[in-house]
Image 1 (tube, rainbow, N blue to C red):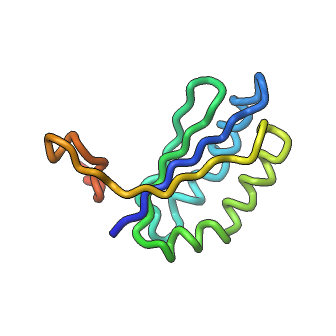
Image 2: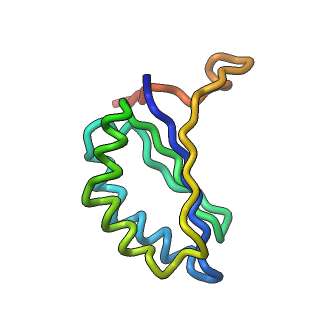
Length: 110
């Protein structure tokens, strides 16, 4: 079963664009990591919210110990108001089976 993670990074005033730039640098590397199913950034202009999904906990643990995350932490060292918050989540399917849950697999149309 996949592991879903949400991480909130609160930027110091005016520095959210630099936090986004740090993710621009590392995201292509993270996307190539084994087990990465989703690694997507969202923002409200100050907080950067990462939504992640990993095939297994072992894949997530390898990501946490890997070079891309170490680089991300280096890039963000002076940009954040506080350490980032991370949640490990279990899906709670609600209502429509398509709209009530983040899909576990990606589909590509060619």
